[in-house]
Image (cartoon, rainbow, N blue to C red; front, side, top):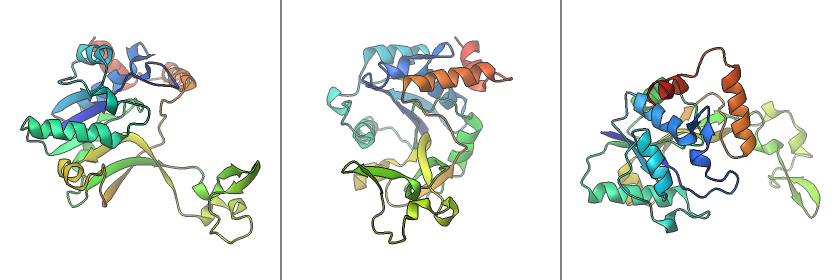
Length: 241
């Protein structure tokens, strides 16, 4: 059995109550719930939250919320490993026989369920996990930081003069993890006390929009309004509410 885990705490500095803010007439978290429900490789959909309000919204969209996450695991300083370890321990304590955890971040709302299914089918069990990412337009070697009020590069060990001005093709391709889908193995979390382990299988997706700021909602609303065809997740949500 494969279980989708959708983490959604109530606290958010950039966008208050981000996970239940409306997008296209539905709460943000509803899109990840719908994607999991439409994915042929997922058997159950569980939301991990510290909030009764989010739990009620998730239940309205037919996700399971069998527990409330402790507040101390839902702070600004809390990590993904914190809530994942809590979930894995809950699975073990509940004697659930689970093959894989399909980790879906609600801040990446517009997924293709068929892409999720293909990722799950293609997962190599010799790997400790899978992580999705899209290719960056510019490698990190082209980026700058400010030290003592002056721009400088992030790679002082690179002795080429102004290496950051070299063509991007000079550097290896770089990828940004995007929350489209991560595949987590329970035994890796339990035994190694890490989220992904040492053998992370890459899953490359098209570039996706992640929700971090209010303008990200506005951008996605614009894209959805201008699309000639209704996004399948929005269509599914509209038909099932």
